[in-house]
Length: 323
Image (tube, rainbow, N blue to C red; front, side, top):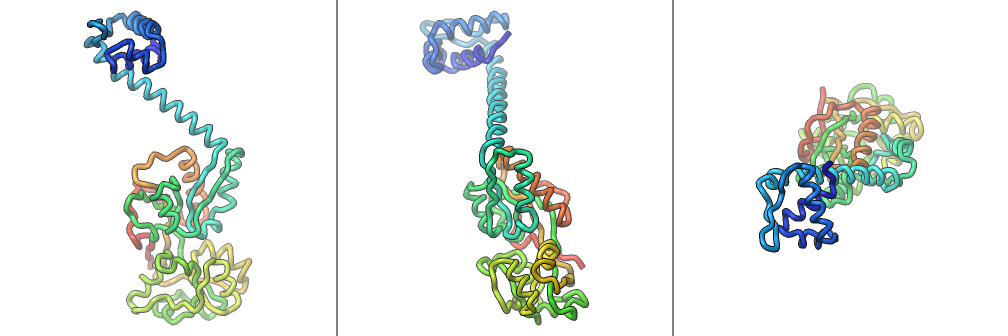
C-alpha cells in the first residue's frame, strides 16, 4: 500500500536528485528516506530512481508518477485546510459587511441565524454606509458584504444582485398620499433625508437625482440628518416628508410615525441590493455562510432577484425604474 509518507519522500528525492538532500529538507535520517523509496518501489513493482555517483536520477516511470503524487498530496492539503476552516468557523470571528440600514432588514435576526448554528463564534456586522464597506472590501478588511449596488464602483469587485426594494414617499399629510408622486411633485416637496455625510453617493439620493434630472433640480431637502429613524420621526411630526425603502417604512412608521403613510413614486423607483466581494476571491466557509443567511433574510423582506453570474457594478446601476 502506498503511503503519504512515501509520496513525500519520493517528491523530495525527485526534486533534489539526492537522498541526502531530500532527508535534510524533510528532517529525516537518510536511511529512513532510502527505505521509504524502496518500500514505494516494492508497492508499485517498478524502479523509480537509478543511482549515479552520489546522487539519484529518476526513471521514466518516476517522471510519469510525479504529477500524480503531487495531486494526491495537494488534495490532502486541501482537505486539511477545509477541516481547519470549519474548526475556525465554530470558534473564530465572522465579519460581514452590510449597507447602512441593514439593521432593519437583517441585524439581530441575521446574528441569531449565525449563533443558532455556531454558538461558539464571535460575530461582527460592519458598516454605516455601503461606500465605506466597499472600500473595506477592496482593502481586504472584509471578504464579502451585502450592499446597495448604486453606491459600488465596479473596479475589482464582483457583484451579484439578490433583491430589490421599492422606494416610497412618506408623509403625515393624507392629501400628499392620494396618488403616486411624480418628478414634478417631488421637486416641489419639502424633504428630510438621512445619510447626510454620504449625501453625494447615497443610493436613495442618487435615485432621486436621476428621477429629477429632467426638472433640472436636486432633491429639495429642508432637513438633513444622519439616521433614518430621525427622518421618520420628523415626518411623523409633520415637519417634512421623505423617501425611504418600503421595508424601512413598514418597520418604522408604526413605531415612530403612526399617523404617517406612504405612496409609490411615478414611475416606481427601486434600489437593488447585492452580494459583493473581490473579483475571483476564494471565499471562506464563514463568508459563504454569511452570504447565504444574509441573502435569505433580504429576500424574505424585499423582492427576490434570481442570482445571475456575478458582474462588475457600475456607478448608478443599482436604481431601477418601473412604470
